[in-house]
Image (cartoon, rainbow, N blue to C red; front, top):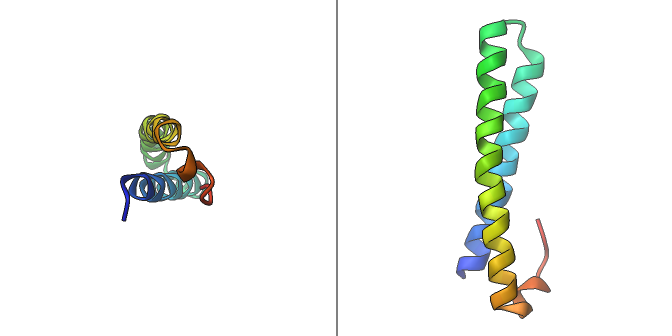
Length: 71
């Protein structure tokens, strides 16, 4: 598995985690839990941003990788 593939997989996983956290925040009636889920979703967005930046770098370094399926 290439680094690009691993980064792409990590990005997909991070987006899935964020979506789950946002769903939990919407579904709970507990305001404290809602705030914690929302905060965690915001924090994971920072991770997603970093992974997307890294993915762009990988695609620039290896243009053929860009042709592979995207997340």
